[in-house]
Length: 92
Image (cartoon, rainbow, N blue to C red; front, side):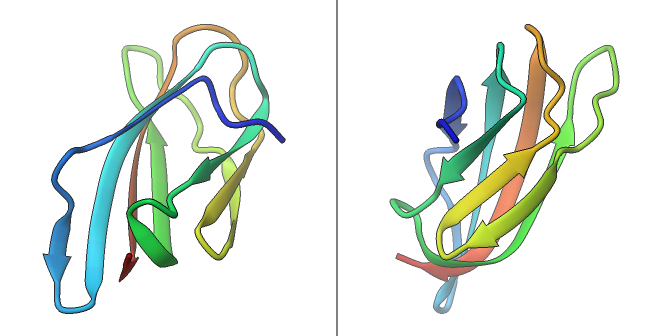
């Protein structure tokens, strides 16, 4: 699996104790699966939420978590596949 086309993490994660909330967006222009590597912001992921945004509703892709990698499957292929995500986990 390849890293998705464009991933943008919000510059300031929310931190509370040893936990952090990381939010961001991703744009998928051609793939149908891929992964997000959140190791730069988190040392482990407890919860990951993703939803499609834009004028046309997109189904949230299926996902699985392995450490700090989030594997995404069944992403809507084609341009305009915009998604927002939020991950909660142990801060790095």
